[in-house]
Image 1 (cartoon, rainbow, N blue to C red):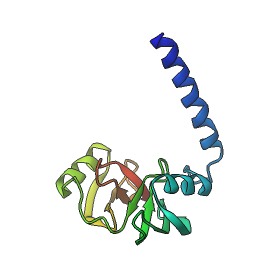
Image 2: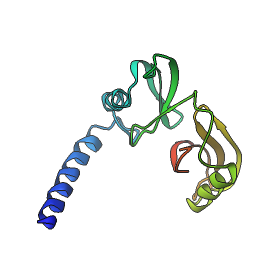
Image 3: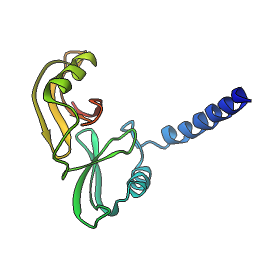
Image 4: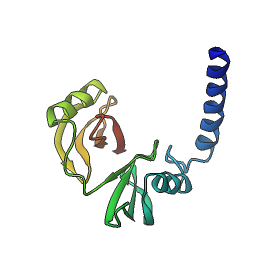
Length: 145
């Protein structure tokens, strides 16, 4: 029974992943409509000026308590990072270590700003990149190369 349920769940997940990829906007990310849906699910309203730049979606919105916030949005998951966030679960050294384990070298200018960690470095091909990093996981959520 568990095998049948697991198989069904995998089939549904695979079926759901296909359309999202097929509808992407060419940035390898969620479409504008999908981003708006994710923001609404996270409690944001009055989403304006939604645009893709610097490797992430950016928008102005109202938070659940009605405050105006500037958002950066993970282009793959739709997770929003509000500029009002002032703390991170990770330290600067942990972010550097996460980037090193992901293959980035010459990492510098690591700063927590506008709800995400930002850093500069070189990718595995030796190309200079600017990175945006999730403050909870250390995962790169945006690149500007």
